[in-house]
Amino acid sequence: MIYTTLLNIAIFQGIVLGLVILKSSLFNSKSNKYLAYLIFTLSIKLLTQVFEIQQVFTSYPLLRFIDNIEWVFLMPAFLFLFIINRIDHPGKYKQKNYLCFIPFAYSAVLNIINDLDHVAGIYTIPEPGIFIIQILGLIQLFLAVTFIPLLPLYSYFMIRHLKDSQEKKWILTLLTIVSSVLLVWLVTALAGLLLDYDISSTMSALALCATFIIHWTAYIGIYKYKLAKNKEAIYHFLNNDSVISYPNLPVVHNSTPQEYKESITADNIYFQKLEILCKDHHIYTDNTLNREKVAEKLGISAGYLSQIVNTITGDNFAHYINQYRVEAVKEMISNSEYENYTLLTMGLESGFTSKTTFYNAFKKVTGQTPNEYKNSSK
Image 1 (tube, one colour):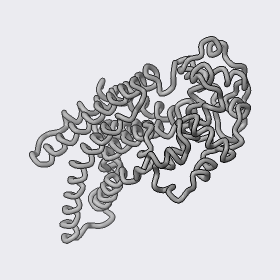
Image 2: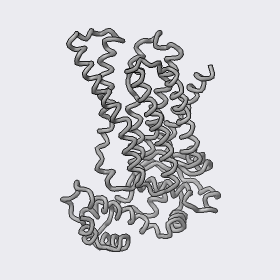
Image 3: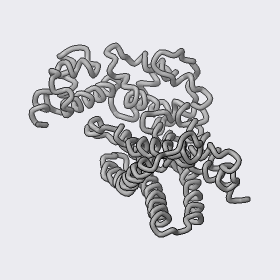
Image 4: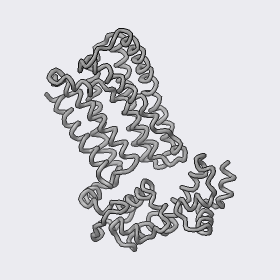
């Protein structure tokens, strides 16, 4: 059956894509891991759809435990966390991300309790317990009609903090597609529950939409928009992954490919990796960090690293690293968790080696001393 074949292809592609994002250091970042988890969740939903079509649940009823868990609660959570970890805004550190998983955890526990009775037959829920389960089911319904629409809506609000217009465009499109699928699912599920409506055809159409999301994310997110930039660079790094490991794994030194030497742009694969090391691994907090150490991690020469940074940013390597340190201090200043820290402590925590270098770098980047900036931000 063509429909089942399409679902199976999407499941396979989703698993492979998710593993590539998680395992390859070219793609692996704090934000992208949530995109991988979103794709895995879509793959699980498609797998349960295939099981339903092929009547696997009849032969293996215990698999109903997987089917009855509302995986859909994870989708807005993973999508939101993907977005929140891509924005450059101090408020993201104040987010209590674990709250995103409360609806899923609640729903999973409730459904497992039910399935231990109806599927596994381990016990029988007594009549008073059935009434309590019904009340708890209404709470789950309330969570569905509030959480599923509102978290994507809040995600739209947070997208405005994305600075890259092209990145903002594709993530906005991804959010719109996933949100639309979730809303249609919610309306369909409510219609089936309250109006005794046959939802099978609509759910089949939604499964096809999920396959599209997986294919579209693979093509647009990775190859066309680029969670990592160009195809040749992707191939190169997937086959030379040891070059990228951080912080204490052995580095395989190889010659810098000529094609990357000839044209240094923001798409340069080594500059992308440098950005990941700074943004996700926070290497700038190491106060002994120097150009040679970073070049060794990237598997290139210190001279080529300087050439990359100078060409793309217009600044030298030291100023490039100090900008990240200054931004880290600014975020600490705006975060109430660090209100008991002195400014010098914040500077040292961010990787500066002394008060003088900290104050000079901060003034150069912001035009203000740390004290002036702190007073103006109140």
